Length: 499
View 1: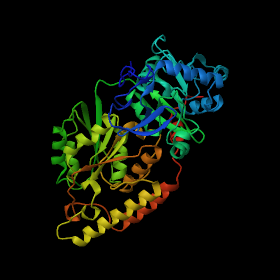
View 2 (view 1 turned 90 degrees about the vertical axis):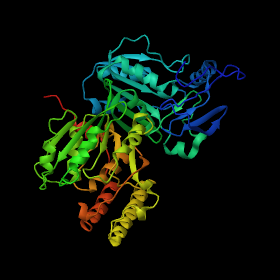
View 3 (view 1 turned 45 degrees about the vertical axis):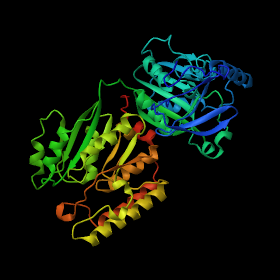
View 4 (view 1 turned 180 degrees about the vertical axis):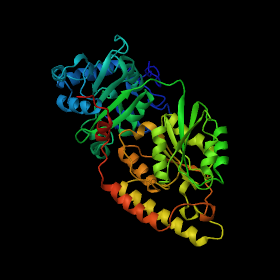
């Protein structure tokens, strides 16, 4: 019996399996979406997974599978062609071949893969356990696993992915072709969408499929559209750590007044179940900040990156990304505007599997015009708060979001979200670039309220009142129209064997 389920309900002719907790995040908060025939579809209020509840029992699934098979080998579900799949897999992993496990693909795919040099083991889907069983396969045997129209069949998607993880070699590749619940057909047609099938127990979108892979210890995830209503998903097996790590990136430039107090507080901070690595990127300060940072260079929890010249906060954070090894990343300015006690709530959303990207919204964003209050400088406060309202509205319109505080320093996300992204901005415009590229890659953020105490120019604020807003406007228009192509970035950055 899979986690989150109970025995078939009495009075339902042994045909229904109630689901008590979400199949991904174990939440009990899900709500009814719609019904199709006698199948009831719900959505998890925390992670967003869409699934049947209750599920059909094995007997009912057998009947459904028999009807599907009588309609045709694939039951009406289209998959990307063998050639297109294998071509994209080569872009992701390189041209080498090896042992391939194919689940849900037909003999035509097997023949095409063998032509390219793969040793193929093919497994058919099975109605007996609502998904193929890999129990008979020895561990760490395959270089590549490809699955088509299968992930939604498993009573426990995480259990199925962990079985695939078991039979893949370390660094092995998992390729998934699956319907997408956030395609326009699903959004507008709902239960009438072409890809709704009674045997599918769960339906994934860009965010939930990546969450499932992350929980199952797959990384370097890239999701690409395949047609109008399907996804191609690429990922790589990694080994589970005994304890997860949070990387806290601290860009520091001319913050001598607050730097030591911040570092001492960070080093005292404990997060249950997490280790913490602190990455200080010092940008050649002129007020003694570098000398303070050097005092921590031998601390076991601190990595110190020394830049040769000040090139902006964005450049420093990008340097911090290159040094980060954690499962999660949090950006922490070297001033004391934000409260470290908010870490627990922000990180908990990631660790629980409910979200991949969280923003710490200042004052909850409820009253933008009171967000920044500078003592004796009401005019300056009005200018900054009006600018915040303008740029927030612009971001929401350009990128179809409903954010209240997209510019918060507290941006917390799974480090794997950065895979396949390149960043170019060096100053405060990097906040915009990071936010938008994560959103466009498929990680809509969750906003949580945090504590915030604004500082003025007298206290060290570095935003330039005229130059920076003009640059932000230019960057937002650039981000609206550039192409975000993680596969091309991953392909170009992959080491190529010598000729």
